[in-house]
Length: 364
Image (cartoon, rainbow, N blue to C red):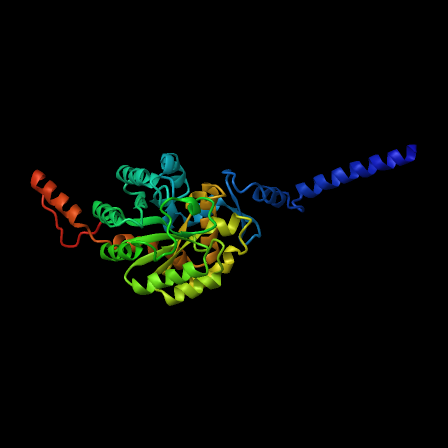
């Protein structure tokens, strides 16, 4: 018995010494074990994300901070963000700046009466932060003819797009319950609204679930009947396959895919990986944009990290620039100044005596 205890002590001490020596000599990847533990933490945590599956030459993992620094010059645009609700954007301004999110398409609630108020919050945020905020709106009932007046008035005022609009929803725990939800992308006055969007050259961001069946048939009908309308499929990758997205983009040049990278990278319900979508992005480089969806189900900072992870997987600086910034920026900058805006400038010109060249004035 005494000899057995002595042997056990010797083995224990020897093992401890061996592990210590291995760690000192760098023979055991303790950092990788530590990183793995962090990446398996709850995705709803807002602690700095250690981005999975993104390798550099030495075989170690890039942190979110490293990815931000690597892609800082891209001027990333978050194309889908709900932080006008409860004025969350105020606390997010510093987060966006720290993570090199250059601009944010901001709105709040979706297709329900409360969205009228959050639309106003989006506009206020834009007035206070015009270099960062791109205001959209969704506070109208597509089943009421008055929606056409609301859409025209808001676009004349200077909003840059419509969204997120609940064109159809069966399964979303939030959107399926909103009061002004559509049954399909051709429901109510949506066809007339598409024509107004085409006139003002603004996009409309549509929530559609499920991403198959009748509602997708109706989406394709909308795209075919309104070829001059830019329709953005919100979080197109959520519960959807790369092949389905490929088929839709192939047939419809006026369709854009809003890619919520956080869903694919971090949501356990995703059946795809980020790299599964890369070939489709390379095939249709002009029809993708990135978003956080305010970090739905995973946390917003984690969703920002996932955007950078996707950009890294593209392994193509020009394509990364297009998807991160240029595709949406081109849509925004192509919008002409409205009659209301031009009249306001003329009024100010008379008041101040300063003249302006209005011949090629854009909404921006």
